[in-house]
Amino acid sequence: MRTLMPRIGAVGAATGLVTLILGTFLAWTRSGSVYRDSYQSLGLLKQLGFMGAFPALDFFLQGWLAVIPAVAIAIALYALGLRRSAAGLAAVLAILMGTIAGVAAVQGGGTNGLVGIASAGPVVTFIGALLALLGAVTVLVSQRTRMKQQTGGEP
Image 1 (cartoon, rainbow, N blue to C red):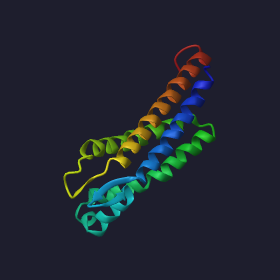
Image 2: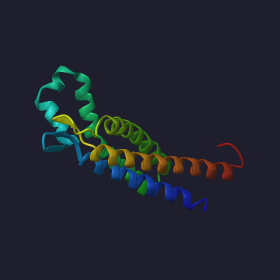
Image 3: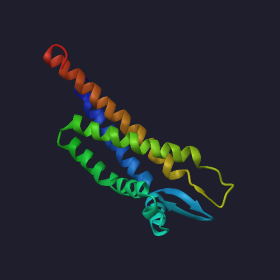
Image 4: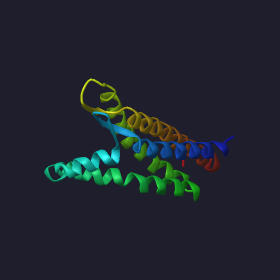
């Protein structure tokens, strides 16, 4: 069972990361009857000129676009057997994306206004982030326990 836990954690984390990415392609904002995914929403902000006025938003946009390659790297690291490195990257991605998605999910959901936050994308992204974080923590804890047992003490 001890050698199985890192694999279970890696599969859980990879599944969570894929779910997290899928959530970014679901509806994040709505305007009237039009729903936009997170990338379309950020592209709209860029077209409206908000990125030039607020450098932090431009940095956020670039970071948001970098999530897909970062997830691909994390999954590749899991596949190559570098579970601790992959779990560290997965945990960072899950915390960042989960925080953003959680805030959006809490703020969204109301259908009273003409413009608002849709709930599908943020909720799926948040669930993926939770699963990825749980899997990453499982990998890190089980790998640490294995190292302790192999060395007879603290790593």
